[in-house]
Length: 401
Image (cartoon, rainbow, N blue to C red):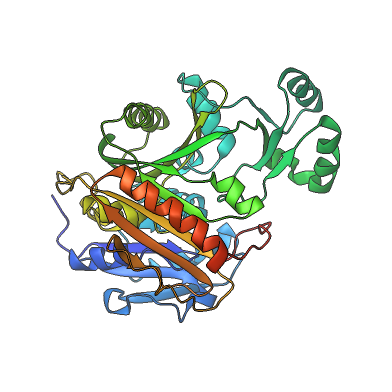
């Protein structure tokens, strides 16, 4: 049975995102609170759907966050706390545990933030992962580098989008990087770099059951786009294809192994160029970025943010069924642009269903009846984007809003 008072949901986000989640919670009769960064006070939030705002300074310590939310809870009952962005997942899990509010706790959240934890758990369950080693014991690192041929990737355990990653080509290159990291070394792992095609699977999960999935292929791997420049693309893959079947099977196995109960996930997998094997790369308990949610909605009619809100409000106390998906195909193309407001009027194909409105970016979401149509259109656009718009900037060492 639901409580008689309106359900109050506190949403936490260090970034401007999740507007549709906030609207969907309000549409279901919830009282909606938003805790966000002070610098986002004037961001494009759906203010008509938010009952109260709370603002936090950057680099707020967890203890201070717990104090602030506990203070707010003195005068209003909080039923759910949701992290709208990946970088808030662990703090929100700690808040749930401290306030004893239902939802994913710290142990499970580590599997969706900590690349070392998720790899170790996946490996225990027989899910293939690239050879890796924790950056901890130097003798173990030497043994790993003697056993696993370079190149390797030095990866932060809790970052995203290629931030902080370094490609290492020889053992002598690693030690100076570790000297620079100092006491932060143990927050990294070393992983074999595997050339291959990278895929992502976006899922809706209700009471441990995957109830909706969509499999996609990136154009260039995200690491390559971030570090070497290029145009980001992703597109649906044919649902009946063997790669799609393999991805969806591995994704279900992974979500079960990590103990995910309800919400949305964004998982990435790599198919090796050398032997065609499929490997798990990483997973997050969030909606995919880079307009992936818009691509999924264009192909299926399902809005991941909205369905996530429905699941959170139900909280496992009411059966959830996703809408019946459409069977179409979509893709997204996005590039950093030299122009502040790029003129994309020369791109006028009827397949364009969304022109991405973002300063110093050019991009579209496109839709067609077949996966091949979408892929071919994105490939032709990527060539044109490089000439018309593309700009390149260094990958930041840490995320910025």
